[in-house]
Image (cartoon, rainbow, N blue to C red; front, side, top):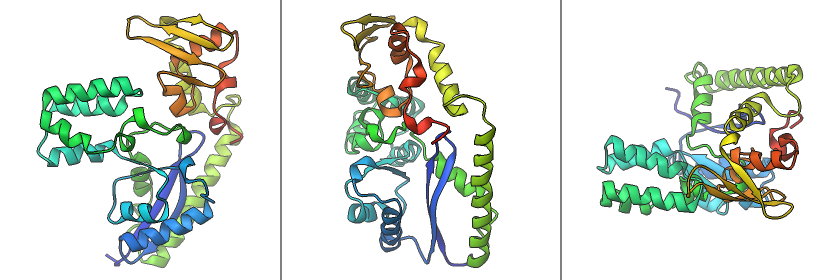
Length: 289
């Protein structure tokens, strides 16, 4: 209505809450305005080693070109819902294909990813060919960088941020910026106050809930020790066998590697060593963080 665009960057904090990082008002959304925004963002966040950073987007107008110019070496992933809409617009639809796409996106290993891609090819060979033109590093957990400690497939954080500022979004620029300042100030302080009242130990409550959910299914796995730190974890089938390097915090499922939260296979080996799971959580989930 007022002839401007609001560019924003948001992330997740130690409790998986939205953490607004930056926003700026520009005349229009384009490669030039996104490049201007990303240059300031890279400077403020001191992004020197780009390979340590991961960005998610819905391929907004001019954004990909801006990334290629300003931050060419960061990992860039795209919302799978956006990919799903694109494959549908390309003429490939159906509930079975939708489920197969999400299964491929959710696969955490190359082996399972390849198997899910074969499933897609059986459903629609042309859809599989279309999908193979999209780099799996951009949409499947099996190819995600472990640096981000995040395995989300949906860009819900930005959608939630947009919902939060909806009332301010149709105001003149000065009013908009004043409202945003108040909203963000109040939100950040409210989260600090919550953190001061938490009585959940060292790990943030939402992350502790994820950990408890993982712990409930540990009984289905049997850890077999091969040396002090390495294990084979046996599940309920021939394909459910995993290799674990506990000291390196790596294992063949990659779920722990990607998220930094010990998954069910990892927990079985940690308990076998009579150790505390909390000692193997990534620091990014700690209350003090």
